[in-house]
Length: 406
Image 1 (cartoon, rainbow, N blue to C red):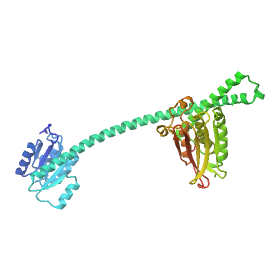
Image 2 (cartoon, rainbow, N blue to C red; image 1 turned 30 degrees about the horizontal axis):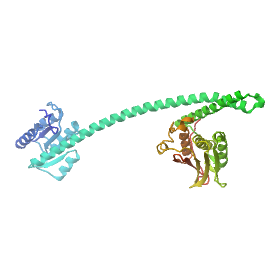
Image 3 (spheres, helix red, strand yellow; image 1 turned 30 degrees about the vertical axis):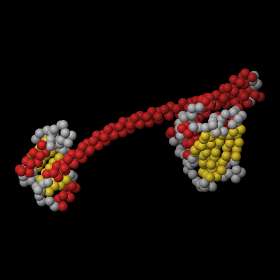
Image 4 (cartoon, one colour; image 1 turned 90 degrees about the vertical axis):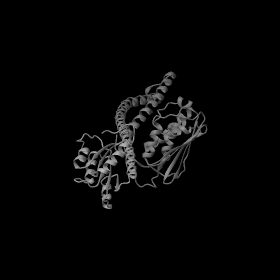
């Protein structure tokens, strides 16, 4: 007998009961309620129904007496769960004991009813069992969908990761190949401009052309260096040779390195550093890279005649550095994305200035690799302050940072 299809609560229900009156009563009530009923009165019929030997393909609920002439309800429960693990088993008995009820529930029975039966209570239990099965079925469908989505996402992530690794490998190789000839170009241009006594005099046009070559070569060199740093970051190949350094000397050198850019825009660069500033635990080259990146950004995105200030002070076992400018400022929306790869704020000034959008991402990585933090405070039209911390050597006795790489 197959179940009705119009009622979502319709089910295939097996009754295992040797008392013909109880069996008939339950069959009539359940069939009137729209269910397909399989009636069994002995071991052979019950096991054939559960195993499917009689053609039964699905059992949703079993209502079984605890004691049949040649089979127990607990044996039926075991056989049922083996083939239909989600089926609900409702046990009936006129010889109920607490131990039997506990045993039945522990083995997976849904409910336990004592004879003489309360039909209304039994029908309520069947409805509850069907509701639970519907929820289980819906959740299983949802879980299947979620698992399928997770599998698809995992596959896509794997492909993206492989593509990302291939991209970084190509990027690293290309950057290395560009750096060698570019270093020669920069070196020879500098030599022609700075060593006139050995290479000969230049006329005004030649000097102007070489200055353009020099400016663009340095821009290209900065891009290649950033791309190499990105590839090292992605591969975990940046090594920090940490030592106690005098940051005052490094900051003075950094200010000198951006002075030409600042002079072109009539920007005043000031230092506000206390005499007794403690040494910090950092790699000299990478610390300078952080300061120069922030100073270059401050000069790059400031208007003519602006002011840029570098200050520092001890702070909770670290030294806090601030690079402030009176430039165009940064919107709140852009501040949230400043340290992302390839991000550049959309303003007239940023469109005019060259840049890769990698400098602040690299800067943040280097600061955090030293055990510090970096943040920004900005107001549009007023200016911006980038602040970061580096542990001082008075607070930390030893630091192991970085992994082996190139």
